Length: 197
Image (tube, rainbow, N blue to C red; front, side, top):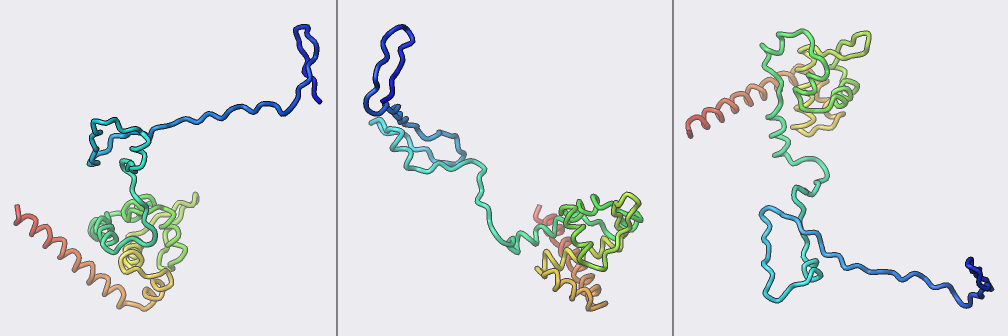
């Protein structure tokens, strides 16, 4: 078989059998202890509880939330719509153009979503400079508000929103009526909050 040489002057020795495998060491690791708010901590009993008995209980992690799949609930969607920063018409028409970053900030969406809506809906026609930057007129911002309302609040699909917008003047009249009712509701909510104080 194989012979092993002795480097310090001895005779070569024959190795018989299989070489010895290194022993695997097993470590007992206690679960990590972590301070968690509002998590009841059981006091250890007088008899010492080992770490292996504690590992049966799951330890929740602070700040970890389970991700939900699918569309957001309608309650959350309506609160998102209430948080829009689109100014009133008098303030909106004070400027001729709004850069795409400002428009995205008004609607609290990504710039890429505004660009996607521009490609999908023919009523959006922003001006572009030589560099390719998009500048939206106040009319475009109002049309974006209509698109946002149809897609986010009414849960229309893109094709459904396109056909709804193509139906004509009734769309704008309905949307303006809904907007005025929302403004009245917001005013009444503020009035009620003022009375309760």
